[in-house]
Image (cartoon, rainbow, N blue to C red; front, side, top):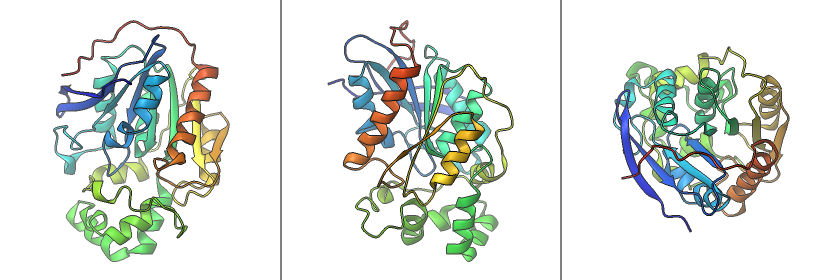
Length: 283
């Protein structure tokens, strides 16, 4: 099995940390993972990265500014700033496929309409017109906390509320077994980035020649099937839904269902050919 290594590069707002696994056997290409809100590269490390390294891909997961071991003032972070972080890491790779989850999917969309990409995959991600469903959830669950966040210019009042965070981030199905999986990782997210999720639409069209893949779940409360299908239509592709799963897609069989679906797409649309070595050096 490939060994997980860590490293840093210079980013627009300070040093950017990343995690990397080398491809096992013949190298097919490179994947760059972009995590979502209240998260970091840990989302990809335990399951997704070993899976795709074993499938022949060099895999890299960055920590956006202010997340994980990356520098930068999180409170001032914006969607555009996060796109710049992705660009800094992608520039050290050889035409990677970008895979984004949650808010990372919106960041990936903004990146893909500005920079060349080999392919774009969205996993339970914010649609190109913004995270309006998330805003409605916040208003419905706790309008007072949303007002506090606005006055403080920081989402900590919401994120620090474990019960509210659980209801916002996870399926409302009481039998779901992974409701607490993310809670010990939660931290404050930038309110500017939250506004960006709501109002900064992806207005440019992704070039028609770029392969794209949109993946969701049938019982996802935050990114329901209707939203996933609408996102796919906006990207001029077909939506794919995993049955009987929840938002995190990381526990037990759920992460594997998502990873296998993405791999089938890669097998069909991304040529299985070796690429030149990248110049991203793990430390």
